Length: 329
Image 1 (cartoon, rainbow, N blue to C red):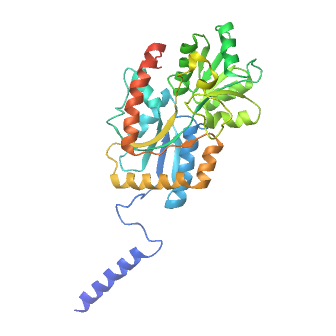
Image 2 (cartoon, one colour):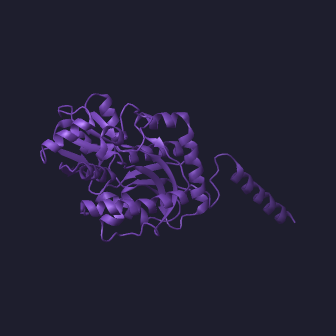
Image 3 (spheres, one colour):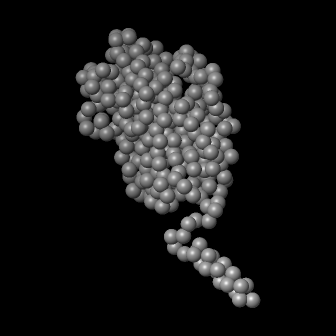
């Protein structure tokens, strides 16, 4: 009898310790170890900024470290492959953008199946792209820029964040619609392309607002137009291509969005908790102010809506890739 009483007391003690503050979480809780957000691009761009904002807030909320890992290269394919090979336990995420939709047409063979090897979590944000020029370029408006490149075919250059990125397609669509020739110089990320435009190695750059706006406000670059159909609240003074480009650009539009995915098979409960936390984080006034400060707009959807948009963009960008004859490295 005394042994039974002792065992019962021991069981109660263990239960009490498990419920006490600071006790180790029960098996199966999420997160149970550090979480990794892979950004398949170099540091300094909108995807990196968004991932780091989310990681910081998640770390504060969960008391578990959330790390951002930049894996740039091959138009984002290296980072996507690293994410696909990770354990599907919810502790590895990848911040994608519509470059992945472009890559479906750009590369003959990918080391992963975008629609089968990943589970969509949610859309997070959108960042309009900007055409900005070095202040020495003799164009203060998009109309003046169009006239300049038409008058000097092949003399001017523009940088993009990489072959096949939305910024590259934005530049090629501009060339196609205006029937002009500008030399394209691809970079491994928006930040280095922007810095070379500031330095004068390039005449212009197509990059995210998150990358370009701080330099525009510092007077190091001149913004001519944004690529989306509507102006962004982060910089309402910058006109759209549709507004400033004349009749040839009346239907011009290229958006740039960011979403979270996980390796296929990740626990639904973990992803549901992640989605709820990200929605809470993006709704915070401080988060929205920080996003607006670098030209990023909240763009929250469900995982199903992210997958639907991904399918639509795959179809849309396939047409642009074909007409421009763009090929992956």
